[in-house]
View 1 (spheres, helix red, strand yellow):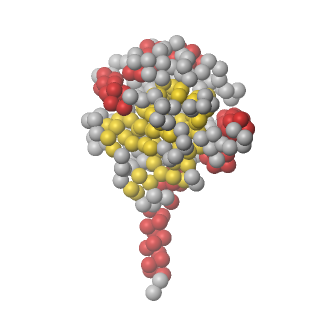
View 2 (spheres, helix red, strand yellow):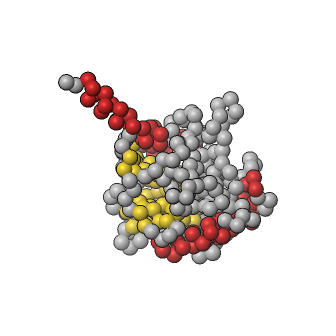
View 3 (cartoon, helix red, strand yellow):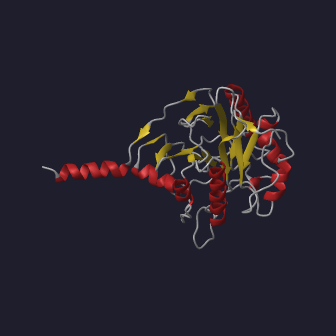
Length: 318
């Protein structure tokens, strides 16, 4: 497996596909494949990251074949690609088998060895001109569902957070104490996505609310404390595509890619593009839609609580 490397101009481009919900027998699946083929051809990425719900396992009999088809747009071209599991991808106990199968496909850069905290959690360094890592990607399995007594989505566990912190400290130690710029990918949004929407200016749409866990396990706090993560990229909520900045970290939804999952007529399927830079200047991100359109500037959303506080102050002031 060839290491991921910044381009000679110092850039590195990632396509984020999310929520394909591939079913193998759905008449919508070919549209999803065509869309991914189109975007890969248009954008020529250095890496494709699938952020969960690649397949809809409840409707699939042959999981290996479904995953093969879901990944084919990247693997057939031998474009480097990686993935994280979503809540619809695999029944419990199948993740090891699916990961081992994916690693056999062309272009897969998921490493053979995995974190001590379990399958589906790993890191990918991006090598710079000096032959050392210039950035690192953390890919995490955000789980499926919380216990019935709690409900809703699962949360990133303490051992996963501890693993990230350990890796982050190690990368900083190699650089004489300077944090290595990092980017995180997982499926289910953190609770801070809702906090950001409620209290900060965001860009894009929130049509369904944030499907985050009921419990906040502290992943975002750990990233802020470590000071290395520049951006977080998630999926899960198909008709949300907004991003914003909270405590120095840009939290970004992808754009739902799959035609077999739910959506909105006025929200075309697509992908989020992320361009990183070796000199650690702020990363660029944009959307590429099914009609070929590139969206660089998404509409601004001003927080509802800011509006309410402004109205209250107007009433109180003479």
